[in-house]
Amino acid sequence: MEKVKNNKHKIVLAITGASGSIYAKVLLQKLQQLEEQIETVGIVMSDNAKDVWKFELDNSDFENSPFKIYSKSDFFAPFASGSAKYDTMIICPCSMGTLARIASGISNDLTTRAADVILKERRKLILVTRDTPLSLIHINNMKTITEAGGIICSASPSFYSKPQSFDELAATVIDRVIDLAGLEQKSYRWSEK
Image (tube, rainbow, N blue to C red; front, side, top):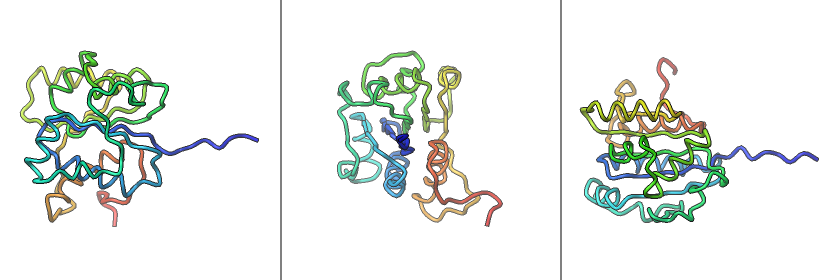
């Protein structure tokens, strides 16, 4: 008898110290809502990410995540190896420093090691960048990651769904991220009722 293949996603979520913690918050909420499509989510946060979250959102709610949080230096985390078969990594928000280290192949922490693994295994890497304006260095790093198979998903919210709150505005970006990750969801679609 042939074994049924598990179609559930194994996702790494890295949260870095770029401004835009609201994007990570909304993404965590959406992943919880889509849990029937997900086998596991592993989270890694930089120290700056925790500080920025506390500053921007006035809370430490990331500590209450239902998903396992790994230390930024935990190279024994399953997604530090391709053999664990995590199929998607989302870095949200992604700082330009993190982007630069990934583009240069520098695996000096769990986030950059996991990104290196995802790229070498030809799996899905989604970087939700937030900085603006961009220098030529940023653009060239984005080009390098794109050529290596990564996806740059700029945190540029849309307004055609007429968002009524900051969370709804952030969701216009996160809905795109969820789509890119291959998860099924109900969300606003242009020219659809």
